[in-house]
Image (cartoon, rainbow, N blue to C red; front, side, top):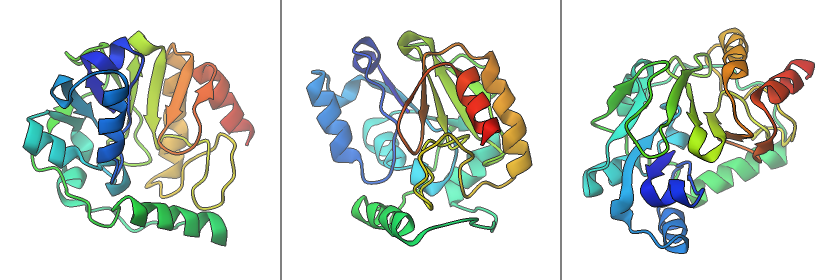
Length: 219
C-alpha cells in the first residue's frame, strides 16, 4: 500500500503488486500528483506477489518501505516454507499464472532495506495508517487501517476471490503458512472501524470488518 499526500486527499490508495509500475504512474497522473509525493510504501506481508516494485521505488525515489519484523527476512530473500496448495481449478489457476507473467511476476526484486513495524503502531505517514498484526498467512502478515479513507487493507489475511478456484466469496486465502493461526487472527479485524475492506486479491468489500469476518466463518 502506498501512502502519499495526493493519494490520501483524493481517496486514492494503491496496493502494490509486481509489474504495476505503469499503473502507479497512471493513477498518480489521474489525481495530478508526481511520484515524488509518495511518502512511504507499506507491505502487508513479504510474499513475492505483494512486493512488486517496492525495491525500485525505494532505490530510485528514496521511498521508505515498511513491513512487520517477522516478514523482514522473507521480503529480503523470498524464502517461504513449502505448503500445500489446497483446492484448485484449471482455468482460474491458469489465469492467475498468466496474469503473473504479464505483470513480470517471475522477476521479483526483493527489498534490501526495510523499516520494521509492530502491532498497534501508527505510522508518521499521510492518513495516519495503523498496523494490525494478522499472523498466519505469513508470520508478519498485517492489516493496515487507514481512517482517512475509511478503509482497512488486509493483504492475504483474507480474500474475496480465490486465485486458484475462482470462488468469489469472502474466504481464507491460499498459500497460507498456518491456516489455524490465520483464522484466529481474523478476530483482530473485529476491533477495526472501517467501511471498506480491501483484500490483496478480489473485489473490495463494502461493509464492516465484523461483517466480512462473520461471512468467512459461515464459509
